[in-house]
Every structure is written in C-alpha cells, then in structure tokens.
Amino acid sequence: MSNIRIDRPSAGFSITAKIKIPNSPGHFLRIIQEVANRNASLSDLTLLYGDSNILIRDITINCLSEEHSLEIIECLKNLEHIELLEWEDDTFALHKGGKLSVESKCQLDTADQLSRAYTPGVARVCLAIKEDPAKAYEYTIK
Image (cartoon, rainbow, N blue to C red):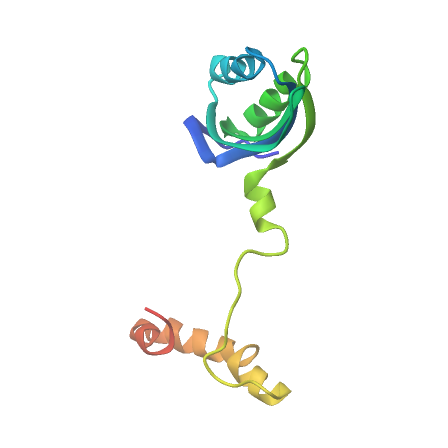
C-alpha cells in the first residue's frame, strides 16, 4: 500500500463502490453523511437499477490516500441496511491492460524495421541525444 497522502480528497485516490440500498428516504443521505464525516468527498453518482424496493448505485468517492479509501470501504460495509456489492480503486482500474496505445508513424513490417525503430535502434538515438541534447528536437516530439 502506498504511503502517499494529500491534504484534501482527490480523484487520484478515488474509489467506485456499487451499493444496494432500500428505496426509502434517508438511506442514501446516511452514506453521504458518513463519507463527509470521514473527510472524503462524493464525486459521482450513477443509478444502475431501481424499483419500488431497492436502488443499486455506483458512487465514486474521492479520498486522501489508499489507506483512507480502505477506511471508507470498511465504513460502507458496516452501515446498516446498506449492502456493498463491489468496489474498485479507480486509478488501478484505469491502468488495467495498460492505458496508452502507440501508433507508428512509419510502416513496420519486418523484424529488421522494428529493430531500427525500437530496440536496439532507439538506444542509439537515446545515446546521440545524451551526447547532443539539441538532437531531442529532431528525434523526439519536443
């Protein structure tokens, strides 16, 4: 677990919890109050399902740290008449499977072409930039 902590709730430490609550006044308010009492902030709310008896919602909560997010989850687990169905750390969810894709500007059909564009070819370019930093403007997106 990370020991990074910030001074106010942030999307960088957000969690999304799927909760099931009775469809009657006051239950969702209790969740909001408990989150606020623990110095976290409700960021987003999505109704996933609702009928005359129950509501299922995704609630996104900004926290102060990883540890703080786990405290919020424990709080939600212990609220009477509230069922925590699942939850995830939004930052780690974003990174599942990678978050960036790279598209080549040139055609790379063979292993030789890839060797020039990537390894070991890219190392040669990096070393040239190390020797002459001005080359970064020619060989990178700077």
